Image (cartoon, rainbow, N blue to C red; front, side, top):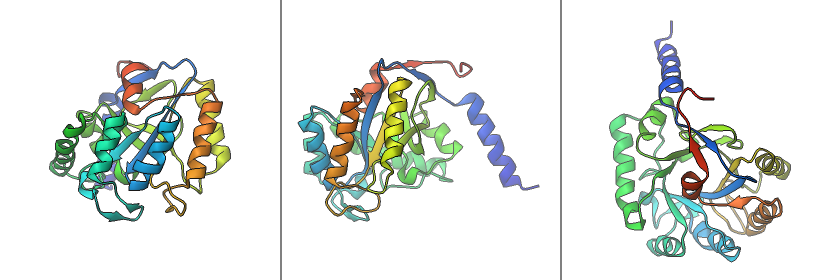
Length: 251
């Protein structure tokens, strides 16, 4: 018998029955959140300003230890970028301090990562919203971090509709390689089911990484969302005004 597999199965069962945080989306016509991971200077500049020109705001998940550094998705944002985004009403989310992989991480390491990050983010009104670096998580991370944040966003694909788990929010990437027809189907699903579609990307520039997109692509997604009649809100705004909490045994 593989004890590691048995332990993992027990963790999944324990999480399912005792640690999920269930809620129902209460949006009349569906809602979209634009989110950015890491986040590169191009997202803080080009993408943010594109949203602002439409009167919209986004959620930017930050690993403070990466500020002013180079990364696979380009130069990461500066302190000045953070201050500007906060000043004009964008939301800054937690992405650990050093962009740590949350799978198989010890409780001490995870708490140190999120607390160090939070100590920086309190200067920007703090945050109660988290996205997993690399999209990596396990049940232990869900159970621990669910006690410290209002929402945990994954990169598991799909629309959050019906009864959802706030510890395991689904999302969809805006990458240059993302299939337009898949996004169109998810937008339609969010509208039909009055659901919550969370979109994410990294860099937004003319020569993006494989984890980003061009300004033209990003602009086309904004137009798709607006043409579909979906509301656009930050993750925090949806949490505060468009969700109804449910007990763990409701479905």
